[in-house]
Image (cartoon, helix red, strand yellow):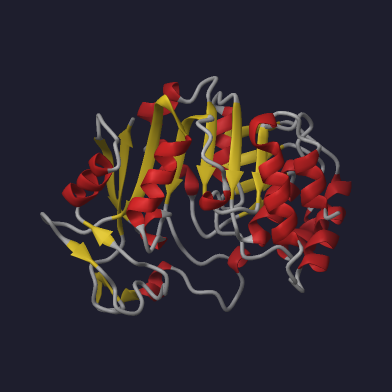
Length: 314
């Protein structure tokens, strides 16, 4: 049984959906992936570095253990690090995205997550899941289908002296059964990757308790009644299927049964938030490569540059 499966099976805080998580994770891990032995070696190595207390020290999720620069190769083996940043002992994991900027835009809703059951969809390596727990969530279920990011999460989590109440599984939203288990659901940077956006929103609605909240963050386009359907790529991404205007998203949310829809932030992505670093690898591109070199308000394909909006609804 793989290390990730052991960690899920040993977590006693997810009883209502525990069997689903274990069953679906077994299926995922039964598929061939030649990187798993390397990632598991890195995880086992990192687990030997000792534990420390975890806290948020802007912009880092910081673990004050005894990890030194001599240990950096074990973390580099888990590249690319997309979400962060993390400070582990003396090692600064300077991720592609500075997630602290996005987190500060959520300040107005922090009180809504305290003592709540939270689902973090497309959680990456768990940067926001750690913050959700640190800021008072009762339990966080993080689902992320990309296996590497699961190993990054477990690497960080293994170094925490008193691990937070977080469970991560390498699953997609549609693999969860329709049980209304969650008080709060985060869907950030996921909607535009869905071929069927209404199905995604309906699934979320089916997982929320009657008085639960959704925080939705997605790409938008300026204007009214606008909807971009990229023909091939958007900002060099193949799997972007829809970029709607704000009013269109509000209509989608209302159509799937959400109420009290509130726009809480609009922000155009800048290089200060997404950029190349050592931690994504030498050959990996980032925002500056996705934009028109003569006009940073356009993507390399000629579409409007990435702009994201956050919505809160229940």
